[in-house]
Length: 89
Image 1 (spheres, rainbow, N blue to C red):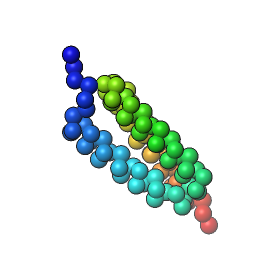
Image 2: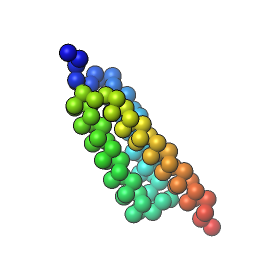
Image 3: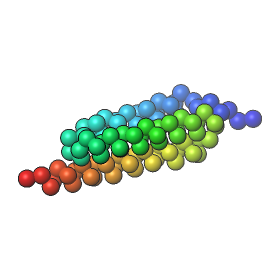
């Protein structure tokens, strides 16, 4: 029977990919507005929870999809934040 516990390398990789993204979200708060940033962080929190639940259930494919979704959300938020910055006088 396959192991359902994530290996430490996978968890470390997860942290190294997600922690910088969270820092970028926080740095964009002044650019995109407090309300939009709060919604974005709530969405990320839910996606992180989905990753943790998928890993706990042994569904590493679902965890990978959720991780990629978080990264894509971060890229989108960066674009929105960049566009907001360009629109300022």
